[in-house]
Image 1 (cartoon, helix red, strand yellow):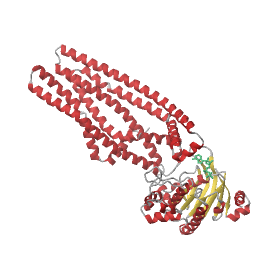
Image 2: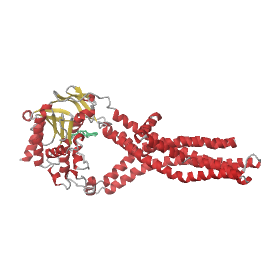
Image 3: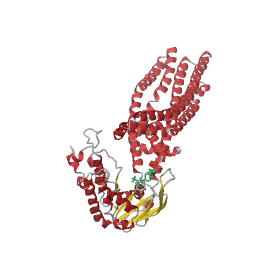
Image 4: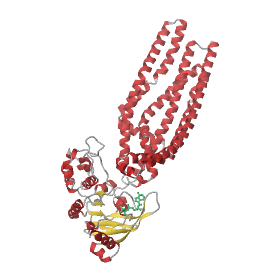
Length: 590
Ligand SMILES: Nc1ncnc2c1ncn2[C@@H]1O[C@H](COP(=O)(O)OP(=O)(O)OP(=O)(O)O)[C@@H](O)[C@H]1O
């Protein structure tokens, strides 16, 4: 659990981003909205006593105060709503920007695959509104306390026993905090069920999975599974909710008893001639105000706990993102030696099964290296380690002698580029979808067109608005692309960086036709020749041996180890796994 100091710091940070003037104005508007009930109580006494004694001056004072109170009460909700909505909109923008920055800028992937991380991220997404409401809440809270204290003082002056009513706010606040803890623990316990229900919902409604869902007729099964996950979650959450509602009802019953007690007490004082009719009116109004303030305070305490919980999730995420902040070594300007893996072991987070075992390998500067092996051999995993998405569980990877875990991840990322088999579909305008490959050159149409040329994505010229065409059928005027066309855009993205030190192409041609594949590899070879000046390493993962054979070095992975390495002719001469796989594929083409 994060400390309250962290929560305050986070809220002040959000406030600073929103703007100090906006925040101060907000507090003033909210504070004014609390004045109405107090003024009414103060105005009622002279009004009633003045009416009883025929004192027109007191009637006038009471009338003005009560009128002012009614005016404030009528206007306050409008101002309050305006202030709160405005503040919520602004703080939501700030919170969402912060969340996106944290999630998308964390250099590694390791945390994203941990179930606990994904559960927390999901909870934080749900609760980002709580965080956004935090500022309002922390402005209202102290005001409510002041309102409660002033009201309590006025009540206590009349009859000290009446001080019991405001004191009831203490157990109410404690109960509200307890209720929030119950709710939070129920949500954490059922976070996996909620995520599962959401994933199933997305699977059933997502166009990408729509075809398979229908062909295999699994629609009804998805509905059942979704229902089961939702029911499990609701059972736990509703039980927690019921317990907290019972506690709240108990507190309100105490308030009701205290209110009636106050009435009886003051009536007895009136009967004894110790209080006037105006005092009765004031006590009733003050008791009502105090009960409403205490009720607000207890719900604010619950909301404050929610803010605190959300802030806890936020700090957890922030710690993950900053974990790599200590890495400051600069990426080399050009590669002289190359990248070396030394006794690398790796198991995915949350698993014990090693995927890479004692892997030692040297990728020489300026070389085109092909990585081959059967399904599940660990090729993509090795790529993820080389691109800094994960760190080895043991052993080390060094770039020109510098440990990869010491390199500034941002600077290293700027000098690598990659095209993946599981490419992302950035549903943006074509220019942006390609430009994200190098944000600094996104607005440079010549750079974007050169990258599109390099990837053979000439279909873009035929799109209705060229580079401005939005991508994705779900958008107005959006163009939907074929799998191969999306993959060409992914390749164009990978071609955006100017002087990469490492170019990774992980089965980049799976969705391309043979012509496109041939053209792509000609370009890869030409680019690799150009990049030799910088010592650029081109790493190609492929199952197609016709393209693999052109590599300077071919590495065969088997069960997470290097089983063979050498040039095409050396490996054929060794007559091992590579020769087997190559001959098998060559035969199937004869
Ligand atoms: N995110 C992950 N979490 C846990 N295990 C994983 C994860 N990704 C891959 N694996 C496991 O790691 C092993 C190697 O997977 P990897 O994707 O590296 O193989 P590959 O050689 O690229 O296979 P393919 O040729 O099928 O693409 C597999 O057994 C797979 O189950």
